[in-house]
Length: 407
Image (cartoon, rainbow, N blue to C red; front, side, top):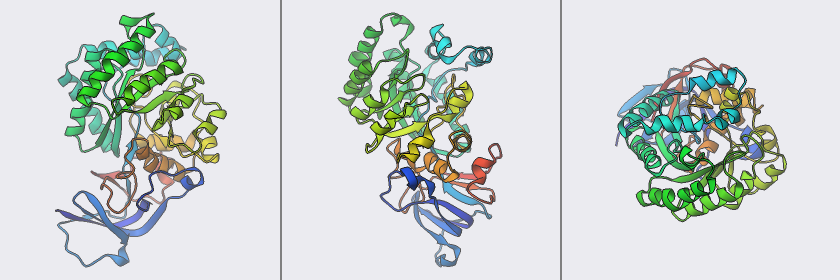
């Protein structure tokens, strides 16, 4: 197996002992580092690291000079809708002119516009569009990504999206996790018949997805104007019969009851939370469910931000994700999400760092193998240009800092 040495690392950030799968509360404010460091890789995994003074006298097949840059684990992005067709810039203009996300959806736009566009694309065209986005996010330092379906809203098109996600995972160096989101909205064909659409998801879509083993997780948009807590529970229970653990949308547009449903059904994550009331923080304490905040959505839609500061102060851990999608967040730049975590969510740089690395990996079920500098973990690494400190990364919110991405 090829043995690689990276030397002349000014700062090695994100060191965690084996077995740490997430950080919570005050733990999030600490990032262990080594200055003037080296790191070795073998078989695609981190083998060892330490200060340059401890560099062993060993032969390596390749030596990479970090040239005084920092090394950190790649960003992990645990909530995206990356497989979509075309773009929705007209809705961007509609929002500038005063229409809300909910109003656009009520007029038949939003998600349903993307559904119409995607229906007309072949699987090959959809794959090619998405791989261009994958190249973009990889260059920006993302090493693990969750991708949802949800722009199909018919059995045939949902399966098309999930097959594209599977193919992306086979074709990309980025680690890909798939989530079935047939309950993203009610399709045009079922307008006024939401109960019938829920039965379609449960009785036809979920078994079809399960038979082909196309999804790791199942998601529901549990929110005002979308799916109720009762409908969400029924869909999650159906998914569980096929081994799909929940990762759900909740409290984006209004307090929805989605957090309670998520906890009751052992969801790995509950995402958005822009309208989360304080009493729901108590529901998450002591559970395995990771609250995941999407500050890029709030930025793009001029919405309130999730109460991340209050969650951490109460003892919860949080993850951050991009929500990359064509309508509410057409960006997968996790460095910008890192910055928004500090600027808008009032997180310390260390807290935001942990939210886009180890905790984001946890929110995909990947933190045993990704998200930190740990012996034996996958060598998914960012090498930066020289930077003075960890805080410089979110502070210099538009400056390119990445010299090289190792996957």
